[in-house]
Image 1 (spheres, helix red, strand yellow):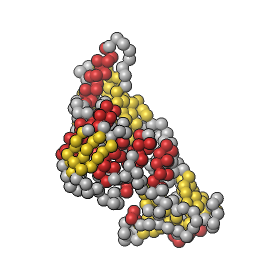
Image 2: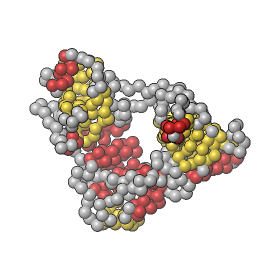
Image 3: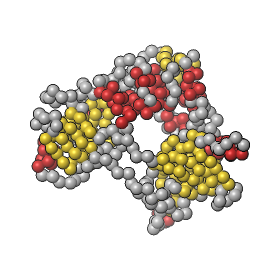
Image 4: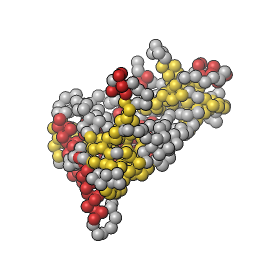
Length: 408
Protein backbone atom coordinates (compact mmCIF):
# COMPACT_ATOMS: atom_id res chain seq x y z
CA UNK A 1 0.00 0.00 0.00
CA UNK A 2 1.22 3.47 -0.85
CA UNK A 3 1.89 5.72 2.15
CA UNK A 4 -0.70 8.21 0.81
CA UNK A 5 -3.37 5.48 0.90
CA UNK A 6 -2.82 4.52 4.54
CA UNK A 7 -5.18 5.51 7.37
CA UNK A 8 -3.11 6.74 10.31
CA UNK A 9 -4.29 6.46 13.91
CA UNK A 10 -3.06 6.57 17.49
CA UNK A 11 -4.54 5.68 20.88
CA UNK A 12 -5.00 9.22 22.16
CA UNK A 13 -7.87 11.67 22.59
CA UNK A 14 -6.06 14.38 20.62
CA UNK A 15 -6.55 14.50 16.85
CA UNK A 16 -3.56 13.14 14.94
CA UNK A 17 -2.55 15.78 12.41
CA UNK A 18 1.00 14.97 11.27
CA UNK A 19 3.25 11.94 10.78
CA UNK A 20 6.99 11.94 10.09
CA UNK A 21 8.00 9.03 7.84
CA UNK A 22 10.85 7.87 5.61
CA UNK A 23 11.36 4.95 3.27
CA UNK A 24 14.35 2.62 3.26
CA UNK A 25 16.07 1.51 0.06
CA UNK A 26 14.14 -1.78 0.18
CA UNK A 27 10.77 -0.05 0.56
CA UNK A 28 10.46 -0.46 4.35
CA UNK A 29 8.46 2.40 5.84
CA UNK A 30 9.94 4.02 8.94
CA UNK A 31 7.55 5.95 11.20
CA UNK A 32 9.63 8.47 13.11
CA UNK A 33 6.83 10.24 14.99
CA UNK A 34 3.11 10.90 15.18
CA UNK A 35 2.23 14.48 16.19
CA UNK A 36 -0.82 16.43 17.29
CA UNK A 37 0.16 19.78 15.77
CA UNK A 38 2.92 21.89 14.23
CA UNK A 39 4.11 25.43 14.83
CA UNK A 40 5.99 27.25 12.09
CA UNK A 41 4.53 25.33 9.16
CA UNK A 42 2.81 28.43 7.78
CA UNK A 43 5.38 31.11 7.02
CA UNK A 44 5.12 34.50 5.35
CA UNK A 45 7.89 34.52 2.74
CA UNK A 46 10.39 37.34 2.72
CA UNK A 47 9.81 39.85 -0.09
CA UNK A 48 11.71 38.69 -3.16
CA UNK A 49 10.53 41.10 -5.85
CA UNK A 50 13.49 42.44 -7.75
CA UNK A 51 14.08 44.89 -10.57
CA UNK A 52 15.86 43.33 -13.53
CA UNK A 53 16.97 44.77 -16.86
CA UNK A 54 17.12 42.66 -20.01
CA UNK A 55 20.12 44.31 -21.64
CA UNK A 56 20.47 44.26 -25.42
CA UNK A 57 17.18 42.47 -25.84
CA UNK A 58 15.60 41.36 -29.14
CA UNK A 59 12.12 40.29 -27.99
CA UNK A 60 9.75 38.22 -30.09
CA UNK A 61 6.15 37.02 -29.77
CA UNK A 62 4.05 38.25 -26.89
CA UNK A 63 7.07 39.84 -25.18
CA UNK A 64 7.66 41.98 -28.27
CA UNK A 65 3.95 42.88 -28.33
CA UNK A 66 4.10 44.02 -24.69
CA UNK A 67 7.28 46.03 -25.29
CA UNK A 68 5.81 47.75 -28.34
CA UNK A 69 2.74 48.67 -26.30
CA UNK A 70 4.94 50.14 -23.57
CA UNK A 71 6.90 52.17 -26.11
CA UNK A 72 3.69 53.63 -27.51
CA UNK A 73 2.60 54.54 -23.98
CA UNK A 74 5.92 56.25 -23.30
CA UNK A 75 5.31 58.55 -26.28
CA UNK A 76 1.82 59.49 -25.09
CA UNK A 77 1.50 62.89 -23.41
CA UNK A 78 -0.84 61.74 -20.64
CA UNK A 79 1.57 60.31 -18.09
CA UNK A 80 4.03 57.50 -17.30
CA UNK A 81 3.97 53.95 -18.62
CA UNK A 82 1.51 51.67 -16.83
CA UNK A 83 3.11 48.38 -15.64
CA UNK A 84 2.13 45.44 -17.86
CA UNK A 85 1.88 41.85 -16.57
CA UNK A 86 3.87 39.40 -18.67
CA UNK A 87 2.82 36.02 -17.30
CA UNK A 88 5.57 33.57 -16.40
CA UNK A 89 8.91 33.92 -18.16
CA UNK A 90 11.91 31.60 -18.12
CA UNK A 91 15.53 32.48 -18.77
CA UNK A 92 18.10 29.88 -19.78
CA UNK A 93 21.72 30.99 -19.53
CA UNK A 94 23.84 28.70 -21.71
CA UNK A 95 27.56 28.94 -21.15
CA UNK A 96 30.79 26.98 -21.56
CA UNK A 97 31.69 24.76 -18.61
CA UNK A 98 35.03 25.97 -17.14
CA UNK A 99 37.75 23.37 -17.62
CA UNK A 100 35.57 21.05 -19.71
CA UNK A 101 37.19 19.10 -22.53
CA UNK A 102 35.40 19.86 -25.83
CA UNK A 103 36.48 16.46 -27.13
CA UNK A 104 33.91 14.88 -24.81
CA UNK A 105 31.15 16.54 -26.82
CA UNK A 106 29.00 19.68 -26.52
CA UNK A 107 26.87 18.17 -23.75
CA UNK A 108 29.87 18.01 -21.43
CA UNK A 109 31.45 21.26 -22.61
CA UNK A 110 28.43 23.45 -21.79
CA UNK A 111 26.21 24.06 -18.81
CA UNK A 112 22.98 26.01 -18.35
CA UNK A 113 21.41 28.00 -15.53
CA UNK A 114 17.61 27.92 -15.48
CA UNK A 115 15.74 30.89 -14.01
CA UNK A 116 12.00 31.35 -13.62
CA UNK A 117 10.59 34.87 -13.36
CA UNK A 118 7.35 34.67 -11.41
CA UNK A 119 4.69 37.35 -11.96
CA UNK A 120 6.96 39.55 -14.07
CA UNK A 121 5.76 43.10 -14.73
CA UNK A 122 7.09 45.25 -17.57
CA UNK A 123 8.08 48.67 -16.24
CA UNK A 124 9.57 50.24 -19.35
CA UNK A 125 12.08 49.99 -22.17
CA UNK A 126 14.57 52.15 -24.05
CA UNK A 127 17.11 51.81 -26.88
CA UNK A 128 19.93 49.65 -25.60
CA UNK A 129 23.17 51.14 -24.32
CA UNK A 130 24.90 48.10 -25.83
CA UNK A 131 23.42 48.28 -29.32
CA UNK A 132 21.01 50.97 -30.54
CA UNK A 133 19.18 48.39 -32.69
CA UNK A 134 18.24 46.45 -29.53
CA UNK A 135 16.31 47.33 -26.38
CA UNK A 136 16.97 47.47 -22.67
CA UNK A 137 13.78 46.15 -21.05
CA UNK A 138 13.15 46.79 -17.35
CA UNK A 139 10.93 44.38 -15.45
CA UNK A 140 10.06 43.56 -11.86
CA UNK A 141 9.70 39.91 -10.88
CA UNK A 142 10.41 37.23 -8.32
CA UNK A 143 13.46 35.38 -9.61
CA UNK A 144 13.72 31.70 -8.82
CA UNK A 145 16.93 29.97 -9.86
CA UNK A 146 20.51 29.07 -8.85
CA UNK A 147 20.85 31.65 -6.09
CA UNK A 148 24.16 30.13 -4.97
CA UNK A 149 25.87 31.60 -8.05
CA UNK A 150 27.05 35.09 -7.18
CA UNK A 151 28.00 36.24 -10.68
CA UNK A 152 26.75 35.52 -14.15
CA UNK A 153 28.80 33.21 -16.38
CA UNK A 154 31.07 34.63 -19.05
CA UNK A 155 30.47 34.08 -22.77
CA UNK A 156 26.87 33.09 -22.09
CA UNK A 157 23.85 32.97 -24.36
CA UNK A 158 20.79 34.42 -22.62
CA UNK A 159 17.51 33.04 -24.00
CA UNK A 160 13.96 34.01 -23.03
CA UNK A 161 11.09 31.52 -22.98
CA UNK A 162 7.33 31.60 -22.63
CA UNK A 163 7.07 29.95 -19.22
CA UNK A 164 7.79 26.31 -18.43
CA UNK A 165 8.03 24.27 -21.61
CA UNK A 166 7.14 27.28 -23.76
CA UNK A 167 8.50 28.55 -27.03
CA UNK A 168 11.25 31.14 -27.35
CA UNK A 169 10.59 34.84 -26.82
CA UNK A 170 13.94 36.18 -27.98
CA UNK A 171 17.42 36.68 -26.59
CA UNK A 172 19.41 39.36 -24.78
CA UNK A 173 23.06 40.12 -24.06
CA UNK A 174 22.67 39.79 -20.30
CA UNK A 175 20.19 40.37 -17.46
CA UNK A 176 21.35 42.98 -14.96
CA UNK A 177 20.26 42.19 -11.42
CA UNK A 178 19.73 38.46 -11.98
CA UNK A 179 23.03 37.46 -10.39
CA UNK A 180 22.93 40.07 -7.67
CA UNK A 181 24.77 38.28 -4.89
CA UNK A 182 21.48 37.83 -3.06
CA UNK A 183 21.72 35.81 0.16
CA UNK A 184 20.64 32.18 0.00
CA UNK A 185 17.17 32.09 1.59
CA UNK A 186 17.24 30.76 5.13
CA UNK A 187 14.86 27.97 6.07
CA UNK A 188 13.08 28.73 9.38
CA UNK A 189 12.85 26.02 12.05
CA UNK A 190 9.76 23.91 12.69
CA UNK A 191 8.29 22.81 16.02
CA UNK A 192 6.22 19.62 16.16
CA UNK A 193 3.84 19.62 19.12
CA UNK A 194 2.58 16.61 21.07
CA UNK A 195 4.71 13.96 19.39
CA UNK A 196 4.77 10.23 20.01
CA UNK A 197 8.28 9.19 18.86
CA UNK A 198 8.81 5.91 17.05
CA UNK A 199 11.46 3.49 18.24
CA UNK A 200 14.15 4.84 15.92
CA UNK A 201 13.54 8.43 17.00
CA UNK A 202 13.59 7.42 20.68
CA UNK A 203 17.10 6.06 20.17
CA UNK A 204 18.08 9.21 18.32
CA UNK A 205 16.86 11.42 21.18
CA UNK A 206 18.92 9.42 23.69
CA UNK A 207 22.06 9.45 21.56
CA UNK A 208 21.97 12.34 19.19
CA UNK A 209 23.86 12.11 15.92
CA UNK A 210 23.85 13.85 12.58
CA UNK A 211 23.36 11.75 9.48
CA UNK A 212 21.65 11.81 6.12
CA UNK A 213 18.16 10.76 7.25
CA UNK A 214 15.51 12.67 5.33
CA UNK A 215 11.86 12.51 6.28
CA UNK A 216 8.51 13.42 4.80
CA UNK A 217 5.90 15.30 6.80
CA UNK A 218 2.44 13.88 6.12
CA UNK A 219 -0.52 16.16 6.91
CA UNK A 220 -3.65 14.18 7.82
CA UNK A 221 -7.33 14.97 7.89
CA UNK A 222 -9.54 14.15 10.84
CA UNK A 223 -10.13 10.60 9.56
CA UNK A 224 -6.39 9.89 9.45
CA UNK A 225 -6.02 9.98 5.68
CA UNK A 226 -3.16 11.85 4.06
CA UNK A 227 -4.33 15.15 2.60
CA UNK A 228 -0.90 16.66 1.76
CA UNK A 229 2.75 15.81 2.16
CA UNK A 230 5.68 18.16 2.48
CA UNK A 231 8.94 17.53 0.67
CA UNK A 232 11.78 15.42 2.05
CA UNK A 233 13.62 17.37 4.71
CA UNK A 234 16.63 16.61 6.91
CA UNK A 235 15.82 15.10 10.28
CA UNK A 236 17.77 17.52 12.42
CA UNK A 237 16.27 17.55 15.94
CA UNK A 238 17.91 20.41 17.83
CA UNK A 239 15.78 20.16 21.00
CA UNK A 240 13.04 18.11 22.63
CA UNK A 241 10.93 18.87 25.69
CA UNK A 242 7.95 17.32 27.50
CA UNK A 243 5.02 18.52 25.49
CA UNK A 244 2.79 21.42 26.41
CA UNK A 245 -0.19 19.11 25.74
CA UNK A 246 0.95 16.53 28.32
CA UNK A 247 0.21 12.83 28.02
CA UNK A 248 3.86 11.66 27.99
CA UNK A 249 4.29 13.33 24.61
CA UNK A 250 7.21 15.51 23.54
CA UNK A 251 7.64 18.68 21.51
CA UNK A 252 10.38 18.52 18.88
CA UNK A 253 12.30 21.39 17.31
CA UNK A 254 13.63 20.62 13.82
CA UNK A 255 16.53 22.66 12.53
CA UNK A 256 15.00 23.29 9.11
CA UNK A 257 11.64 21.79 8.33
CA UNK A 258 10.21 21.94 4.77
CA UNK A 259 11.97 24.35 2.43
CA UNK A 260 8.66 25.36 0.82
CA UNK A 261 5.81 26.16 3.20
CA UNK A 262 2.29 27.52 2.78
CA UNK A 263 1.64 31.16 3.66
CA UNK A 264 -0.55 31.99 6.69
CA UNK A 265 -3.31 33.30 4.41
CA UNK A 266 -4.11 29.77 3.20
CA UNK A 267 -4.46 28.22 6.66
CA UNK A 268 -8.30 28.37 6.49
CA UNK A 269 -8.09 26.10 3.44
CA UNK A 270 -6.01 23.59 5.42
CA UNK A 271 -8.54 23.78 8.27
CA UNK A 272 -11.40 23.12 5.84
CA UNK A 273 -9.72 20.08 4.28
CA UNK A 274 -8.78 18.74 7.73
CA UNK A 275 -12.48 18.07 8.24
CA UNK A 276 -12.38 15.86 5.14
CA UNK A 277 -12.81 16.28 1.38
CA UNK A 278 -15.55 18.81 0.54
CA UNK A 279 -19.05 17.57 -0.17
CA UNK A 280 -20.58 20.83 -1.44
CA UNK A 281 -19.85 22.40 -4.78
CA UNK A 282 -18.31 25.84 -4.93
CA UNK A 283 -16.73 25.72 -1.45
CA UNK A 284 -13.48 27.05 -2.95
CA UNK A 285 -15.13 30.26 -4.14
CA UNK A 286 -15.04 31.89 -0.69
CA UNK A 287 -11.24 32.12 -0.70
CA UNK A 288 -8.89 34.69 -2.31
CA UNK A 289 -6.71 33.66 -5.27
CA UNK A 290 -3.90 32.22 -3.12
CA UNK A 291 -6.46 30.20 -1.16
CA UNK A 292 -7.99 28.89 -4.39
CA UNK A 293 -4.54 27.84 -5.60
CA UNK A 294 -4.04 25.96 -2.33
CA UNK A 295 -7.47 24.36 -2.74
CA UNK A 296 -6.44 23.16 -6.20
CA UNK A 297 -3.25 21.69 -4.70
CA UNK A 298 -5.32 19.73 -2.14
CA UNK A 299 -7.58 18.48 -4.91
CA UNK A 300 -4.59 17.37 -6.99
CA UNK A 301 -3.05 15.53 -4.02
CA UNK A 302 -6.34 13.74 -3.42
CA UNK A 303 -6.04 12.00 -6.80
CA UNK A 304 -9.84 11.88 -7.23
CA UNK A 305 -10.34 8.98 -4.83
CA UNK A 306 -13.90 8.44 -6.06
CA UNK A 307 -12.91 8.57 -9.73
CA UNK A 308 -14.22 10.93 -12.41
CA UNK A 309 -17.91 11.48 -12.96
CA UNK A 310 -19.47 9.19 -15.53
CA UNK A 311 -22.02 11.67 -16.87
CA UNK A 312 -21.59 12.32 -20.61
CA UNK A 313 -22.63 15.93 -19.93
CA UNK A 314 -20.98 17.89 -17.11
CA UNK A 315 -21.62 21.40 -15.89
CA UNK A 316 -19.04 24.03 -14.98
CA UNK A 317 -20.25 26.82 -12.70
CA UNK A 318 -18.48 29.91 -14.02
CA UNK A 319 -19.92 32.53 -11.69
CA UNK A 320 -16.75 32.81 -9.57
CA UNK A 321 -14.01 32.31 -12.17
CA UNK A 322 -12.24 35.63 -11.71
CA UNK A 323 -8.67 34.27 -11.67
CA UNK A 324 -6.71 31.29 -13.00
CA UNK A 325 -6.80 29.22 -9.77
CA UNK A 326 -10.59 29.60 -9.76
CA UNK A 327 -10.72 28.13 -13.26
CA UNK A 328 -8.65 25.15 -12.15
CA UNK A 329 -10.93 24.57 -9.13
CA UNK A 330 -14.15 24.92 -11.13
CA UNK A 331 -13.00 22.64 -13.93
CA UNK A 332 -11.81 19.99 -11.47
CA UNK A 333 -15.16 20.13 -9.72
CA UNK A 334 -17.03 19.79 -13.02
CA UNK A 335 -14.96 16.75 -14.02
CA UNK A 336 -14.75 14.91 -10.68
CA UNK A 337 -17.24 16.48 -8.25
CA UNK A 338 -16.60 18.57 -5.10
CA UNK A 339 -12.90 18.65 -4.25
CA UNK A 340 -12.11 16.97 -7.57
CA UNK A 341 -9.22 17.63 -9.90
CA UNK A 342 -8.88 17.51 -13.66
CA UNK A 343 -5.43 16.05 -14.32
CA UNK A 344 -4.44 18.34 -17.14
CA UNK A 345 -0.93 19.60 -17.81
CA UNK A 346 -1.58 23.33 -18.07
CA UNK A 347 1.94 23.76 -19.42
CA UNK A 348 0.41 22.67 -22.73
CA UNK A 349 -1.10 26.16 -22.92
CA UNK A 350 2.42 27.56 -23.17
CA UNK A 351 3.51 25.10 -25.84
CA UNK A 352 4.76 22.29 -23.57
CA UNK A 353 5.51 19.30 -25.77
CA UNK A 354 3.62 16.96 -23.42
CA UNK A 355 0.45 17.99 -25.26
CA UNK A 356 -1.74 17.69 -22.18
CA UNK A 357 -3.43 14.70 -20.58
CA UNK A 358 -6.38 12.81 -21.96
CA UNK A 359 -9.68 12.54 -20.04
CA UNK A 360 -11.07 9.04 -19.30
CA UNK A 361 -13.58 9.40 -22.15
CA UNK A 362 -14.84 12.30 -24.29
CA UNK A 363 -17.67 14.29 -22.74
CA UNK A 364 -19.54 17.54 -23.16
CA UNK A 365 -18.78 20.37 -20.76
CA UNK A 366 -21.44 23.07 -20.40
CA UNK A 367 -19.71 26.21 -19.14
CA UNK A 368 -22.26 28.43 -17.44
CA UNK A 369 -21.63 32.18 -17.07
CA UNK A 370 -18.56 31.87 -19.28
CA UNK A 371 -18.48 35.64 -19.84
CA UNK A 372 -17.32 36.14 -16.22
CA UNK A 373 -14.02 34.38 -16.92
CA UNK A 374 -13.66 35.93 -20.36
CA UNK A 375 -13.88 39.44 -18.89
CA UNK A 376 -11.79 38.75 -15.77
CA UNK A 377 -8.97 37.04 -17.68
CA UNK A 378 -9.09 39.24 -20.78
CA UNK A 379 -5.62 40.70 -20.15
CA UNK A 380 -3.95 37.29 -19.79
CA UNK A 381 -2.38 35.34 -22.59
CA UNK A 382 0.16 32.53 -22.47
CA UNK A 383 0.58 31.79 -26.16
CA UNK A 384 3.89 32.81 -27.68
CA UNK A 385 2.45 35.52 -29.90
CA UNK A 386 0.36 37.01 -27.10
CA UNK A 387 -2.68 37.11 -29.34
CA UNK A 388 -4.87 34.34 -27.89
CA UNK A 389 -6.82 35.31 -24.73
CA UNK A 390 -6.36 32.88 -21.86
CA UNK A 391 -9.92 31.53 -21.97
CA UNK A 392 -9.66 30.87 -25.70
CA UNK A 393 -6.41 29.01 -25.10
CA UNK A 394 -8.14 26.83 -22.51
CA UNK A 395 -11.01 26.12 -24.90
CA UNK A 396 -8.59 25.09 -27.62
CA UNK A 397 -6.76 22.77 -25.25
CA UNK A 398 -9.96 21.13 -24.01
CA UNK A 399 -11.11 20.62 -27.57
CA UNK A 400 -7.76 19.06 -28.45
CA UNK A 401 -8.14 16.41 -25.74
CA UNK A 402 -11.67 15.51 -26.79
CA UNK A 403 -13.89 17.67 -24.58
CA UNK A 404 -16.76 19.45 -26.31
CA UNK A 405 -17.44 22.78 -24.59
CA UNK A 406 -20.69 24.68 -24.81
CA UNK A 407 -20.58 28.27 -23.53
CA UNK A 408 -23.69 29.55 -21.81
